[in-house]
Length: 455
Image 1: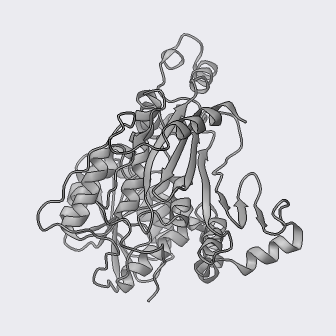
Image 2 (image 1 turned 90 degrees about the horizontal axis):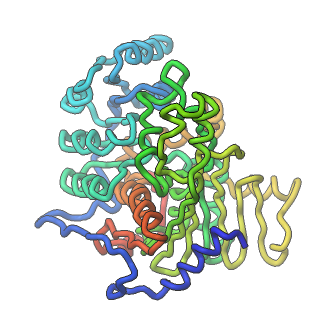
């Protein structure tokens, strides 16, 4: 067995019976709800026939989101905002090219606040650097706006609670834009799981393994992140800083806070070599970036156990020369699915061998999710990570049009993002188990099963 997994599995076995009185578990505080404040599970708001959208942050993600939204019906792009005015002008050109009216433009340090304060906007779409997500989302909700936030929604437990409390007080939607939940294979496995094809799902895996060395060390002129913000985060923080791409789809399959909840995790990070070696090769040995101490290990592996005894494995590696991988593995009492390195399906009574060829193609087509059947062709045409971004956008607007609960609510945003801080705590304390707070404050079993609502 892989040595890293052996260590983590051993930790789970040792601490598998931890309870509230066990001092070996690092506990997390759950602040009480204020008087009169209630949960927003299955929150429904008044239907919005034409959703007036403002985009804040027009870098790589934001500019592409503007393009996608020009393909959606029942949407008005009302405002565009970025720190740099030239990015606003580029986005205005996107609207002009589609013969759409110009949006109100904002730039500078406080332009985003002016956008949130407008009274003619329904949805704020945030695509800014990570550390700005929660403050901007909270301000937007406090000013009466629904919010869609790029991943991760928060980076600290305090920020996670800020999002939850603000959403509960304002009764506004707060969705983290976890696009991987809407990828074609992930949605097909969700459909299979909900129809019992895997039996009882007992173990799942997800990851974000993506060689980002060039982007982390690239200047803005080279196409890198504004002010090296992602590199700076990796210098300062360990654990898993980007867990949600792998975690989101499998949490939906496990019905997290819809009949089950994540109880605790153990996390372990390898030593760091990838960033230092890359920096030395690009800038030279002895340069500041080559000699910098990076808190982020090359590989982080986190194991999570749920209330109902299910296990989740999540990995993160952005510094190794290896193919892109989100794992997406589903293992149940009757069947198995895996997306990487190739799509596989296997079911009893022949689960020792994966389906192949025409059998696989026909089966996957039979169990394609109704949502991707409905919008998949257009999504592939519009694009956005193969179409999943457009499916996510389409679904968000559909729910707002029809006054439906969102597929990804504020508790998803908080729970999935919380792994950032919790994995760093565990990895920094010899992989001791760390409690995962119940952001629903006891309502995790109130809703039975994950469901994409339709009108």
